[in-house]
Image (cartoon, rainbow, N blue to C red; front, side):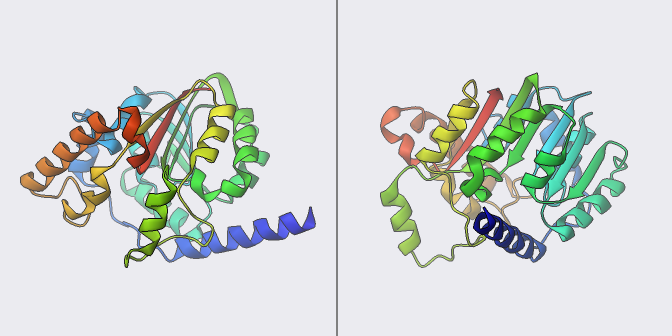
Length: 268
């Protein structure tokens, strides 16, 4: 038990140090970004699909795991939700609080700096919606325990949504690691594999898995600074086309293993 506690503390320190060094967007969200996620005109795009399945969040109490610079929590608050965002990085939480003030939503969004496991174990509140964008693959060693604890924060009709990187092919993963492209991430970070997806399915059996991003693995090269809203029409058009083709290709059983991300959503 003591050895596990030491490993956990080390993982938390590594995660906090890594995300403290990240470059965050410290200014307000652009009007284009706010309008995009309010209107959700292109739910076939991976980023918009996750928001599309959330539906109307007005009046909902939401827990966001791994809130980062606050972008998602602020958008949720702008759309009428009350949000508790947690993150392990003190700097990220500081940035998120400043940005919330810039948008005048500090009364509807609260940010707490703490590791995921401690917040879950110490929180007595329950939530209408629990979301995490690229967070579960950071807690793989304790994934089953985290999911079990999360269910204690859920109501009978709580909606769960997670958007995660996945690796469904050992061959593709090995090939990716051999390419001369830097792998950025924390020491224990890696995409979710089929074994972890099975753990999620076991704890949240009523959720749906939607696999995404085969061609969009290269989507970064279609957009300016990876920003969809600020990219020219031809870049967005190419990105849109790749997303539509991905949706067709990844709906077939034979090539689902080509996906690089997944959205897990539904009631517990």
